[in-house]
Image (cartoon, rainbow, N blue to C red):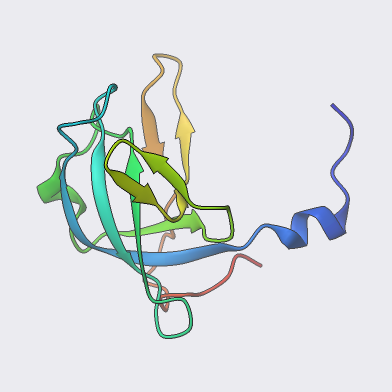
Amino acid sequence: MGDLGWAEFERVDLRVGTIVTAEVFKQARTPAVKLTIDFGGKIGIKKSSAQITDHYTPEDLVGKQISAVVNFPKKQIGPLMSECLVTGFTQPDGSIILAVPDKMAANGSRLA
C-alpha cells in the first residue's frame, strides 16, 4: 500500500459527536449497538451501527463523545441506514476500543 497524499487525507471528514441514544442492535448478524449521534448544527444528527459490545454497553455510551467519518456514503445495515462510520482501534482479540477526544470538544469539530 502506497503513501497517502495530503489531499486524500483532507477528503476524510472526521468529526466529534456526542452519542444521544444507544441500544442493542438485535437484528445485526454480529453483536452491535445502534447509535444516534449529535454532530452539531451544520451536520446534525446521524445514525450508525458499531460493533463495540465487548467493551461498552448502551448505558455506557449515552453522553460519550466519539469520532466518526461523516462523509462516507450511507450504508444499509439490516433495517438501519448507517450515516457515519464510528472510529475505533482493533485490539489483538478483535474487540474495538473507541477513538475519542481526551477532553470535551464542540460537536462537529473536525480532526485537524
